[in-house]
Length: 344
Ligand SMILES: Nc1ncnc2c1ncn2[C@@H]1O[C@H](COP(=O)(O)OP(=O)(O)OP(=O)(O)O)[C@@H](O)[C@H]1O
Ligand SMILES: [Mg+2]
Image (cartoon, rainbow, N blue to C red; front, top):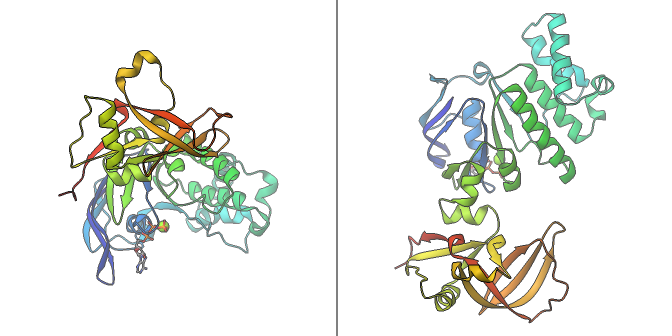
């Protein structure tokens, strides 16, 4: 539905997005995920028309919109800072676009009811001045205003970033429900990996103006295409050469090319395994250092030679003390390997 082809976008002759190609399907919840400054907002602005790429093209449903003015694209937008009209009521904000488009009064009224219902705004809230609403409620209004015009595509740039953690979780669940119910194609920008994994049908992981990987949350997590992706998503231990040497000692069939780098996710480092599965694991002798308690789970940090290895578990170990010797087990199939392009 949305096709980005060889996009390059620059400021002052310096490209901040290079050779970016991407296909977003109709009805998809598609997320741009990446660290600050990697070009997510810039790419989104090219889709909405606020920026014109220096190279490449953007098509929507086969139509070239690369140079089409913003207002002709009919793409809905939701921003981090809500961008509502402060002197209007909630209702006036939501119907503003419909009035601009000269919708008849009764259709405006039904559409208002529909979208208010979708985003859980009450009749009482609809009559309030926008400034009397909390951040979460204001973002609901911004979403309702965008939905009201019934766009095929809605882009959202970090829409939940200004909200507290609890509200963020609640609203992201609602966003997913709204998207599923309306069938609208959503392009969502976040630097929050958890949000991306939970919400998305597919994710594009951005790094320094380029895409590292496009895939389902499951793909991105379990089959990361690059060291950047494995590092950015989830919690992975990069195994130092000295640790790799110990894995080799523990198991004769261990093979790792000198140019390969190995990672293991913290939840795949085990403190015990069933005896009968011993052949499937590598073993590391480690020393316990410190524990980080997260509630739902706990991360124990161990030392192997001079390197730290994190182990995520859902069991607390009340007996463990700093300096305790432990064996750690890493499943052979849990090693994630990359060929190091920079090695000699
Ligand atoms: N108007 C501008 N003029 C010059 N440089 C810009 C402009 N807008 C963005 N940039 C630069 O382009 C790069 C990408 O910025 P962008 O806003 O797309 O990042 P982002 O991925 O959205 O980051 P964040 O998560 O912090 O919002 C950055 O290096 C930024 O400094
Ligand atoms: Mg941004």
